[in-house]
Length: 264
Image (cartoon, rainbow, N blue to C red):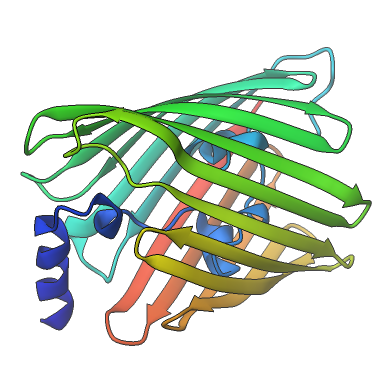
């Protein structure tokens, strides 16, 4: 009952950041909102556009990928976010087109995103334009996201993602700005993540460890305050990849996210 009342307050609140789920996919949720824990691909257009490209794609071949995800907050179906994204890349360039919906009937928000990314050596950069619409007020707004990923050493990577770096349109649909700065250390079978995410409601620090054994990946971590514990499990087989994450809030209960990509 407490979670349901809280959800109603979120939907009624004029602060748009309050009704926005955490950034990232299943692996990022598992690693305390560290976006580098997610594999690069089309779903990155929503939170870190610098990672649209698949770094293993052949330089002379067009690489196409399709991604989908579903997140549910506090076990409430009314607070479900769905995402669908399609990307294409060749060599160092990639682009993606994506659609996101979130919220219950009468207060649903829709976002259409178009992103581009490029890489040169160990530096990856990307930008995405988002068109937001709030169905309850039939209002719209646009926002620009930007991302940068830099590999400073073979096993050490830093990244910055700035969401809603610039925005305009109806304030009822305009997203609030937020950003994530993070680092990842690859130690072979394990990768250590540390991230700081901040929006208008404050900042949170999180981190986790990702363990890989063949096609399987297990990610565990936490973010806070308040401390939210998380666990994610992923698998990859050929061109297909899927992951599931579950987080536990100390007072609001559990949230879960499942995502997957298929490339060819």
